[in-house]
Length: 132
Image (cartoon, rainbow, N blue to C red):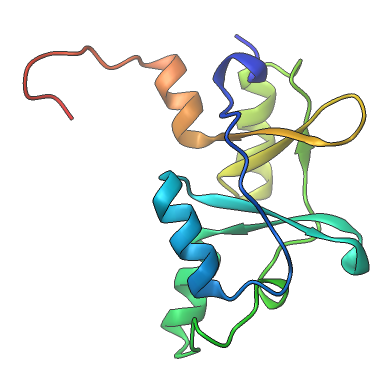
């Protein structure tokens, strides 16, 4: 199975000056765990994850004043839609992260694949009454 088969095509993009609260609200509304941060001044494409927000709040920083750019990972490993899920899982395990931004041939974000997406493909959940 390929990344294109598992990735979410709902890509939330935010700017570097969004507050962490704004980013968290947008991520929560879409039920996603990461946002792509487009920041031409910092090299282009970065990622802000729920863990980045949690770490900031855990350090006592205010989500109302902290900006995305201060918590964005800019040294990002990108995936291609044609990668296998094994390739994606190996990149995640090697890098110690849970999300990969998927770029199309033009270098634009076209999706995000998460560990959860990969698990869903490798171990499909049986739908039954009362299952979450």
